[in-house]
Image 1 (tube, rainbow, N blue to C red):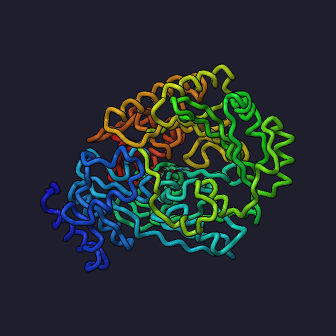
Image 2 (image 1 turned 45 degrees about the vertical axis):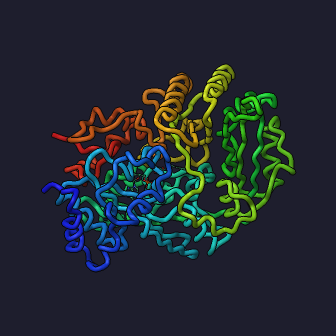
Length: 513
Ligand code: FDA
């Protein structure tokens, strides 16, 4: 049965037939003739490159309120032979949660976002449609000494974020979000609702880091909350090239992994226009969270990184939830409730890439980077370096699909972003970042050149748009994201979704015989 574009009513009837609450489902479905269709589609699109009239649009969007609506959407998509895209927060860098080259529907989990925090048990159940900002807010509402180690940006959706790992300012102390997930509810390709026990340990392993959109629709996650001190300390120190940024960044590489686990110090390298004549300034910002008070922090920085010259005036003590604000860039004094905003105000056009570094980059290499930053003169060129070590190095490479553990000094996120312009402008920036990425090849992990699945990058390889993708083709990108865990992911996929119902440009393929 082919899905006729002009008869979404048939699909709707199918949904009603298979939903427990038939009357409500029609109110949860948006077709192109519905006046809210565009706003529902656009609201969580994060990358403006994909918010264009020419971008492929879904035949319809379903916004389930109950598990039975998800089950119905799976059954009907199968029946009509259309692809399904699952969207939680819409932050996918390549827009895979709301774009497809073949006819498709979107299951948007925006209405499934309840969060139940159990302070006594130090756990929470969080539905995939919640954002991490909502999760942090609900935890802080109930406790000043519990937190959760997930993403820095509050609008990131729990569904996609946890599916790919999820790191934030506490990764050196507590690892990734998925290292703290203890149960989950998932609807599989047959439409069955499964939990950890009924899905079994293989599938439960795969959904914690194997990437979204491959194994089923994860409805909710049970997480273990982690202790946070009532006082934490933050600072951001900015140093330009004239203020010895290169030397400091070079030193940071050598000491980063040895710092105490309570200390998270990421470096943001960027170039920006600083004068009326287009003068470019290169700057490194040392953006830091310490899980403790200022005195202890100063002792650490004085003994391990004296050249950074951190002073008491640079530091601010605050609560953990206030540090979430700080890292999200909200002005102090804003109410905590801004964490509940699901859509960010600062949407940009962007192309990002990622790398893992295992050997310090020599000073000459850093100088070469700065030179190339000068070439990206009309956009924002940025790199974010996150050091690993600590808890990240204690977890084995195969414990979960996310393989970048011991031996990684730090992860790089390469960024170019711009505020307007059409395809020509976009291709200029995209070419710049691709050439920058080739320059970096000599300094980063090799065979495979590792990449972070949550920083989705279709340049590293894709599945076939139609038909099966063989193991060899998929390994090109799969080994970069998952190293040898890719093989186990393919085995799990072959068992749980042999007909490859859940698929996209970088979904795990089943073995095809
Ligand atoms: P989205 O809804 O786009 O989904 C992403 C992928 O997961 C898609 O393939 C989708 O189909 C699938 N999926 C979504 N929900 C699913 C579900 N319930 N079940 C199964 N599959 C599902 N990362 C990080 O680790 N730390 C950080 O600090 C940040 N910060 C950050 C800031 C900004 C502004 C952006 C745009 C992105 C980040 N990220 C990040 C990256 C982020 O973790 C990544 O994009 C996540 O996949 C986003 O999850 P969403 O649910 O928002 O995306």
